[in-house]
Length: 143
View (cartoon, rainbow, N blue to C red):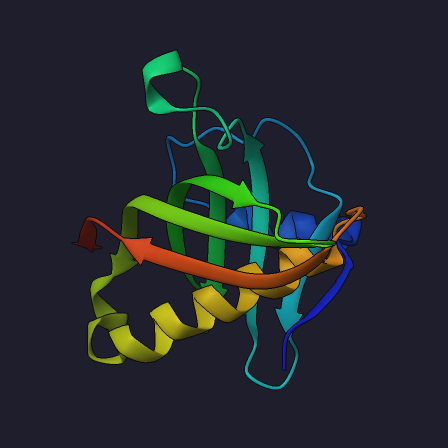
């Protein structure tokens, strides 16, 4: 089960060691969504994912770590507000999955969806997140 918790300096140092060479980390994220039992974690790195691509703003960037393997992806999202709730729809334009996780793709993508829901529910948000969907447009296998 995923939980939303602070990202320690030690966890950030471990992230930097795992992070793909040539990618830029803008700063230290403050929180992570983690499942301690499975060792899966999601870390949001920032971006402007709530703006349309036509505005030429960057999407949101995330890393998902499983068994020491880094899955990176970018996402844009829209929100709707039925009553006092919030529904979020993610469109994940690019996700890079290590080749060693290819056989676990469906488990991985489901875990990413679950982690995103917990992440958005953990944010200090004026409305309860009642629904979250994620559509994966382009899956790329690396390494």
